[in-house]
Length: 154
Image (cartoon, rainbow, N blue to C red; front, side, top):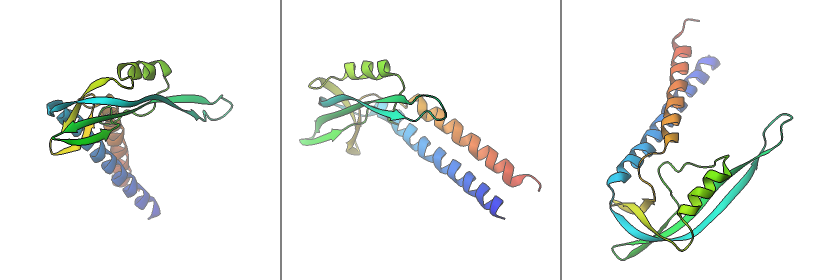
């Protein structure tokens, strides 16, 4: 009984994750047709955190391009930190993150794509990030395994 409950929760969690990533990916795709405004990068810095590698291995570092930009739409000023949808998150490559930050230095003018229905929602790069596709694939795998576990004969 408890086993079936856990399998059902696994199925629901996989479906919820898939739906959320689908929504973020759709927003990323929609951003390609959003209007744009000129913005100014207010913050562009490398954020890093140490991650426990586990076992006897040394800890490792992950890096994130912390961006904050300001833009105006119809006389209203907005701020955002989204680079794209979904925001890719941390990377193990400091070189990759440094290259991103070089494209958006503090004080630089940038093209900001904003949601016409909600101008506070914006990004600097359109289209969904590849992590949305990977996340959706993993979520579907979880759903498939949970469904198989639920439907198999005891």
